[in-house]
Image 1: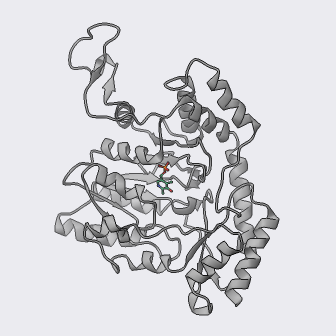
Image 2: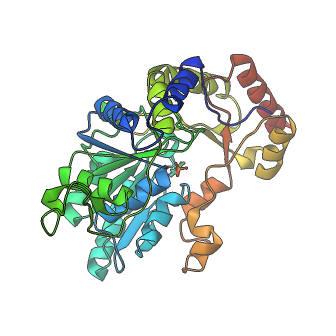
Image 3: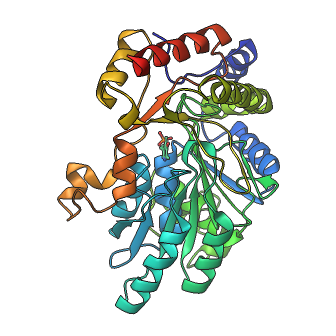
Length: 386
Ligand SMILES: *Cc1c(COP(=O)(O)O)cnc(C)c1O
């Protein structure tokens, strides 16, 4: 089976992890800070805080933004569950903004209209999680203008977009988002097995994120409520978690970072090749988002179902039967039973629902060969021409 995504590991990655295994520090050691500093430098950000996964990163980013009970978090329905769940962890209400029918990203025009209404109703959000779906940022310039005007915090969920850029600068640089979150899960662009990171330029947010990652503890005398009792002393000044990453994982992430440009170049090449090979099939191809250069985590097509005799499900199952591990990103989050129980229903976000009825994620990862890609295209041609 050709998977839809997978990691690319080499001997340098293995050696980097083994070196940590042979060192004094399996966790809370120097490799974590090296990984953070390398990511911050690469993304032109001042601070980077590494954690055990992007879900934890989203949780503490929301807390650092001050999100709590009685507040609202908005995000796109076309995302992984974690982009919405982070709001629920904080006791906030979650709502969604429908997607742009072309880029499949949160639609900034719909957002503007929804904010106008929310201002009248007194239901403005405190946090917007702007997901860089498939690796390309939303209309971040417009979103940042709206954040200024309506006073909410933008967290860019760039789990798909490590190595992407927007408006000529790296995603994570903090020009249009207060905090940016990355995931290093093996299907994403670079991996640390499990791992996540928050980038920010704001010192007070970085300090808060570091504290929340580790039990709400501090060893910094400046943050303490009374003089230190001695060299052993620490204080817990708020409720935090153990969301730490290990040095083993950080070593893998750091080693993978060396290959980021290479990975993205191959992903772009494969995406451009899909564009050419699929141009005459009854499918809609990804559209570029203005100003965004995608990292190409996913290559998603939409079946033009009215021009195809098989159903969406039959084409999907046909591809799986032909050994192609296609996937579907994403089931609209508001239609999950957990969110239906909170009051959402079919028809609430029609663009995301129409998209869901047509979308298929084709295999895309650096080690996918041209021959494997040709096989994917051939099978898709067969099934859509049947
Ligand atoms: C993968 C993913 C996450 C969660 O990442 P983990 O590191 O697995 O916790 C969050 N948001 C989006 C959009 C993702 O794709």
